[in-house]
Image (cartoon, rainbow, N blue to C red):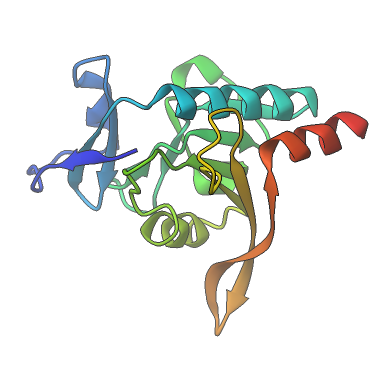
Length: 180
């Protein structure tokens, strides 16, 4: 999914995002407001299938969960996030720190890579999120499937980074998970 990045807006922080107009997805990248474009139906279908698969595994999975960075002007909205433990008073939270997540998922829409393999991977790694999945189109551009690249967090030279563990078709991952 791609987005429009606006120049830094003086004094805007994560808490201010709730006052912005509804119907859009917003991220803050070190103070820069990013308005995300609507996703394709392939993107929505992949998100729905993954959400159902993860939910069936008994984890707390959410669409577009807010992840706060280390600074008040840093927030990302992955397509899906698995929360380790829900905080009390859930209704009062619109975002959580990276330490609250065990997995985040980004789905790459056609012709709109938005740093899923680079900037976002580095950002999520710096938040300490143990697992990161990137879902991309198949080489055949199959409308009914996607490639899931599963990455695990490691320390490389003292810096957090993701290492790809495997790549699997979403349809195969669903079969594996349903057999468990």
